[in-house]
Structure formats: C-alpha cells, structure tokens
Amino acid sequence: MKTKEKIISNRGNVLILIIVLTGVFLLIISSLLGVVFQQKKLNNILIARLQALHIAEAGINYYRWHLAHDPTDFTDGTNNPGPYVHQYQDPTTGIIGSFSLEITPPPIGSTIVTIKSTGWINKYPNVKKTIEVKYGKASLAHFSFLSNSDVWLGENEGVSGEMHSNGGIRIDGTNDSLITSAKSTYICTPSHGCNYEEKPGVWGAGPNNDLWKFPVPEIDFNTITIDLANIKSIAQTNGHYYNGSNYGYHLIFLNNGSYDLYRVTSLKPSLYQIDDDDFSGYEYKAEEINTQTYVGNFSLPTNGVIFIEDDVWVEGIVKGNIILVSADFPDNPNTNTSIYINGNINYVERDDTNRLGLIAQKNIQVPRHAPSNLNIDAIMLAQKGRVYRAYYYNSRDRRIKNYIEVYGGIITNKTWTWTWVNSSNNVIDGYQTTKSIYDSKLTYSPPPYFPTTGDYTFISWEELPN
Image 1 (tube, rainbow, N blue to C red):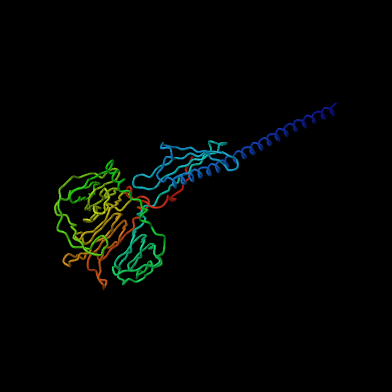
Image 2: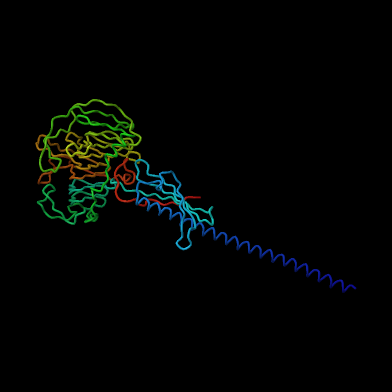
C-alpha cells in the first residue's frame, strides 16, 4: 500500500512541473513575439520618419522651383496666408503622403526668404519631420566695387572685398579679395596712364595678383533692376517723398535716428570742371550750397525709404536702415538728378542695425568743398552716371585732399575716380589716399529695395523638433 501511494504522488509532481514549464515557455514566447512586434513597429516608425524627412525636403525643392519662376510670390500662387499643403506622389506607388509649407517673405532690408516644410506619410500621419531653409538673393552690394567701365586703382588706393569691372582694370594698389574683369585684353588709354596700349584684363604693380581673374562673365548693367519709379511710389505711400525744388535739398542725418532737411535756395558760383558725361571736355557747374531754408526735422520712415525728386546734398550720422534716392520723372537725360556728398557720412556703429544706400539717377559726386579727410559709410550706386570727384580746369580751383574711406561699396556705370594725377603719377587734384572696405552684411541684408542680382541661393538648413 505504501509503495503505490508513492508512485501516484510522483506522477502528480511531474504533471505540475510540465504545466509550470509550459506556462513559462508560453510566457517567453509571448514576450518574444511582443518584442518582435514592437521592433517591427519601431522599424516602421523609423522608416516613416525617414520618408517624412524626404517628403519635407521635396516641399523645400518644390518651393525653390516656384521662386525660380516667380521670385516675388511668397503665397504659393494663392494670395492667401499659409500653410500650403500638397500631396506627395511616389513614382512607383502613387500618393503616399503630404507636405505643408510655411513661407516667410524677406523683411524690409533683407533678401532672405524662409521656407518651413513639414512632411509625413499617410500610413503614419502623426510621424512628422520639419525642415527650415533660408534662401537669399545677393544684392549688388555683394561687390565692394562694381563698374561698367575701365578702372585704375592707384598705388595709394586699396580695396577690401570683391571688385569687378566689365572693362579692364589697372591695379597698382592693394586688394584682399578677387579682382575680376570681363575682358581678356583691353586698350588702356592716357586717362589711365597708357598710350592706347593693349593690356591684359587685369594688370598693374599691385602685389596680390594671385587674386586677379580674367576674363569672367560680364555683369550686364542693362539687366540690373533699379525701378526708381516704383521706389518713388513706395516713398509716396509709406515713406518720405519730396518733390522738386529750384536747386535741390540738403539732408543731414542725426545720431538719434532722424534727419534735418533744408531746401537749397541758391548755389555758389559755378566752377569750370571736367565734363561728367564723358570726361572729354569741361563744363561750368555749381556744386556748393550758398543759401538754404529749414524744412524740418523728421524721424526716419519705418519702411526706410526717402525719395527726393531733385538733386540732394547729404551728410551726417546714420542710425537706422535707410535708402536715399535722387531721381526726377519723367526720366529725361537732361534733367536726371545727382547726389553730392557734402560732408562725412558715418554710422552710429558699424553693425547690423545701420545701413545706408545712396542711389542717384545720374552721378554721385564728392565736390571740391568736401572735407580733406572724408568718411562715407554707405553703398553708393550711380545708375546712369559715375561715382567720382571732379577735376577742375583752373589750378586755383584745384584742391589736393588727404584721405577718403568708403565703408560699403561703389557701383558706377561710368568711370569712377577720387584722384587725378599728371604724367609723372603725382596727384594734382582730389584725394591722395583712398580706401574701400567691404561691408559683408549688405550681401543679403542691403538697404531697403536695393537692387539684387541672380537667383535665390542656399544660405542655411535646419531640422526643427516636432
């Protein structure tokens, strides 16, 4: 009897062990299946994230293409605020997801457009990726010096930043960046110290000839968009506009972010000086204020546009982001207007907050009475004429000045010069030493409505958290 009970007891223990082991096995299997399922789900989500990133990139590429065809449309062709949602179609499987675009147009004083694109796939609509990209159009202020004619940089003249001419360049001074010419060779004339000699596109006694490049593609001044009539309309609507006067206006920038304006009522006697049209002869021209009347003190306009439909004499301390335009309409060569640099123009600080653009329909001229040590903090553009300091026919009218420094840039259609020399290369009129300093912030953050060139180019890429 005792032996039989022991056998029955052992069988019960084995059954219990089998049940326990089976339970443990099923638990392990279910756990493994759960891990496999979760891993598969995680892999699917990782794939969805990668696909969402690609779709977001597709959104960026789409709007870059859009801007290439319509550079001023920041509403995806709708004229309505975004976001703008587009379906994304895979070439092999059809529509698999969508992207949503948010477009931030360039603020005043910038050419940079911000594109934010969020992508997702339909299978996992809550798994999203967002990319923010900035594109900008380079302004003409990308150049420290840009000319549509031949240039001579003398031994006491230096340029910091990129310099380009559609003509030839003689450089006896210094440079720290590219010097480029659209010419492989050109004829150097007596005005640049030659006897009608053929010279390379860039040549001279300057030390940094490893930075000289020629020929390079020409920059077509005819395609440079400077819509002065449009800037006039903007000034009349939201900026400051002043119509024609008998002689012009005198504007003095003040360091508190305002300016004093005077109406010029008479000029001092004309001086016999070189003809500003082609430097081939001489003309009588009055260039110095004799009397003026006070118009008032004005805070700088919020949109940064001051338009004067007459000649303007300018000087002072600039605090803000401003474009000052001198132009007369209807556009007639006989009435095109000019800007005169009456005295020093300085920024309160040479930082990102202060920018000045000077655009003249004809010339930007430094007159004889300007300071002997002259600073010009501005990007200057002479649309049809030149940026220059004149040569005076009578020796009694000539003035040899000391130093001129430009912080910003010079864009001139016709020949630029600050200095006049004789056949012995001695200064006989104008400034003995000149220097141009490149203001890098002006490339993508120029003064308001300053002209740009080329297409939008990539600036930055960033993935944003979701």
